[in-house]
Length: 300
Image (cartoon, rainbow, N blue to C red; front, side, top):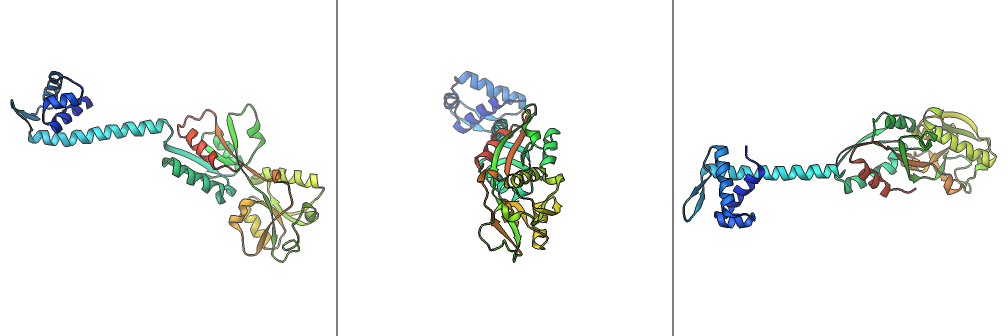
């Protein structure tokens, strides 16, 4: 079978229609080039060129082979480019998991930026709660995770690395007509004894711990009336008048007509965070480039 070098030599001769000019184009002398073409014809078992002392012409087989040689070289060069881009992490497939709350703002920003800067990387998206994402990282079921902080991720012996991606402000969700819906900027003191909808341990341990620290520091104790796993359920219950809730700022993307989302007087550093997490031994060549692109969108 012929090699790519023989194909390039033949193309040069066919395009120049002159062995001397083709040899100069290839930085060869004429004799080695002539031998390459003869070897190519012997390998294929056909005559590609008609040679006279004054001219070189393509045979019908030569015209067919010229078109195919161009196609083969283009395919080989494209294969090389694709392979090199994959090795640099500029093409391929990456599994990106995310929390439901991140889908309102952070995830769209990350996906849009990755698509702009790494258009040949295919992102496979899957929604999971943060604890499930940690398990998925441990079992190599996801490559990169957008999740809430966890003590598990801060273990120095962990094979999972993290980087802060975004920090949100907490908002107070109240039913329209509630006393806190139109008053001055609410404070934590306004929540003391108030009917309160909050997170269940299964899906919201991070928020439970965050709010417990806030309430303890503020010396307030809301009256918990219901626990749920997701923000949309929490807002629905607030809208039904079950109680009020503290929700991440991303909840604005899921606001409802019968509730108000109000800023509450809190230090900015008390807001919930989103982190990126990945296994340090993950061999996916896309991971470093996608991770870097994601962090470029960060608001931490």
